[in-house]
Picture 1 (cartoon, one colour):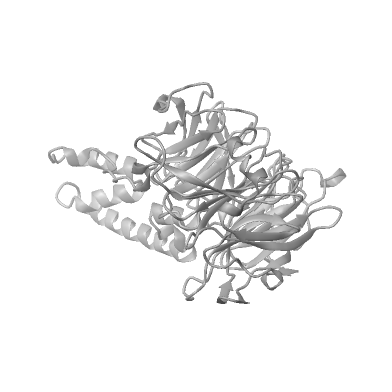
Picture 2 (tube, rainbow, N blue to C red):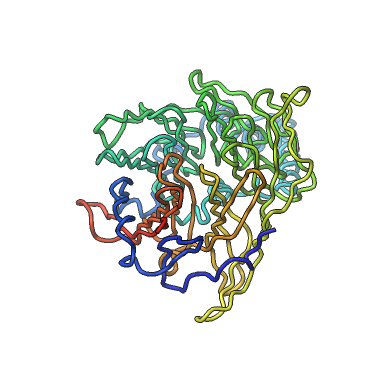
Length: 516
């Protein structure tokens, strides 16, 4: 089993990771970067962030009612409006408050039923405390971003087939960067609020799914268009009662189906986007579904619930592992879909489940190993260095496995109440065949005080593994990747005053690894 004690010491404070050479990460200053890596910059999109995206938008009222003079409507109209806006509790509260407008028995019955509903709601909330959170707090709790509420870039996704990516920003806009175009579309919609995830449709150049507070938006973007502000008519709205906020999306590898999940809904939805229809896949254990990951071979789906649940994607049967205690936090699949790595909320270990190709009577079943094995322990470890002690380790927040199956990147959160503890990215060397191996590679460190928020590998990078890291500094995106079969790292540093009028460019700093 791999542990942080086997890792080399972290880079000195102030140094950034430049490249990997002979299975070791080399640190230093960006001026020390070899010339071959600098030639790769032209092949990657250059992100620029408008100044207004660095601030959260002002939240408007949920309706236009405050703009009008108050007028007391009839009781039945108020009850109808409350039923439509809030549901049963809103209806009962409206009747209970109308003491002089209806029969006393109706008023007393409504008060009793309202008290009963609130008691049942509090009882349900005691089993699943996250249901009592506000919408924004719920998204922040289950987002794959470390600090969703404060990070400028809240969600990030590479296109599976070309060199472009989408970034959801703090002001609820989404910007699409393409290496082959200088046009940067900015996507805005009245329903696009509190974006938690974005996902490009496979085998398609133009459809982007967006997980919003109240729905899923499908943007249809013309790759040849020169427009920087596509109209809201380009967005298709997918909504379902009780399915909000949406915190995770997953496309089938063939692009036919889209999955969406919400912590407040015990069922994940399977969408046929062409007909805007969906099928519920209920999970009767309760607690909602917070994260989804479809295996690359299309045969299985990981659904993060109060336990790790894996669905078989043909007959939609599921299996869970009851020996795992705690909510599944994140997970990722091997490129061939035969192995699943996942973590549990509040724990510092990586679990592994292996799956074999179903045959005979096993067809249509999830299968897989009966127990999840622990393959890595990332508990807090103290490193003795020339510049003092450094404590690294803690719970696992998110993971990404590169498409070649050679590198695994893990965001490890430090102990929140421990002084000196920090959040870093641990990189592992991996091999899935003929036997599974997980070996330490090193820690990635950006500029001083830059905390990683999101990690993602570019699916179509032909020169190795390209890892994207979103850091916590305002407007900062760091990209890491490599030529040949050896990953290299390219990072964009802090926001600088370069760029076009009204925008702030991200200055370039490159790091990486190659064969010498």
